[in-house]
Length: 501
Image 1: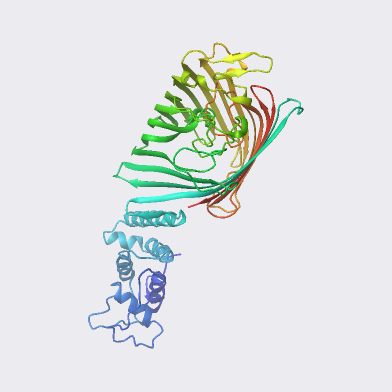
Image 2: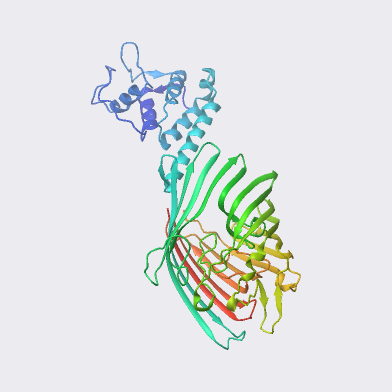
């Protein structure tokens, strides 16, 4: 219902006073020049505030005339002046919006386009939302440098049996680790930002301090290392990365590779719902290292648990991924090329059953790479049934470099069912998953699942992630399956607690 054309001044005082309640940076005036509003009047503070804000001016004789009625045009003028206040509280903005709607006709006749004012209010809301998000994200900024990171605790237990029926020799390994990860970013200009990632790790088994450089110790337990350094440029929706950065196999959800690459990567939209990612550079693979690109803690399978360092294990890497994504369905198609991987041929993988970068089964049958180029194509799909349930399927196959391998050893796949999503901003949120994976070493390099199983194993993988408190995440994964090379039974329990900042 429209307000009456005439309003009592005391009603106006109450409305406009409510408009300014909670206004940031406001203090009430000690006095008012309006002679007919004494200090003990019930509307004194409200009228004084409106005068100090320039919303009310009074009559030429410095009177307020609070008992006199006013026209809607006079009220519209007051609303117009109130729009110039840029420090309104959320409640004040809400009240102002109501007044603008009520007096829209009068304001339009005064030559003010209300929709422009409303748009400016929306812009102000958006700016406030960004400020709130920065506070929620707990960003640490010094000038144009922003610092984020996390503190991690990992616990891993691995059991293996030399016989595929559970008989034979068995071995159990356990490891614990604390890690501090720092991820600073530096704003260079409107398009480009510099990034880095540094890991500081120590084993709670030994309690030793970190050692500099490469990961060292029986399980690579103590180290600190500069893991990534790169510049990222954004032009619209196109992203360019230059340097040493983490790359993720987009077409098959990280099944082929989730690790660091030194080179260039371009991600860009090419049509509505379609995008492409192209990566080229140098890639180093160390099968005995303790972490993949995401810092996943890997227990070495070498005899005695001691990892070996190979100095000549770098290849030329090129990848192309094409992705489609709509509200419920996603699909990807990709190809990965590793050239010069014959540098790896001097490695022997102990009980992994790998010999000269291939597989030797218990009956003596060998499956080795051929040539110096490893090429893998992959396809992946995901479908969301609703806001909670999602199914993800990925498939990869070695198409070059496996002349001496049978089909099974050249194939990898993963089928995963997800329930719900975890959000570290929402305490109590959680995610459950169950998956069956077959990760041939010929078709996968460093898969994103290495917290549960390695790229020479197959079996069931189940897990849960939850956010017990804001900016925290707890993960628990369990794998049970077999090794490709010797068919030995394997189980692995992985747990992690993350404190994010």
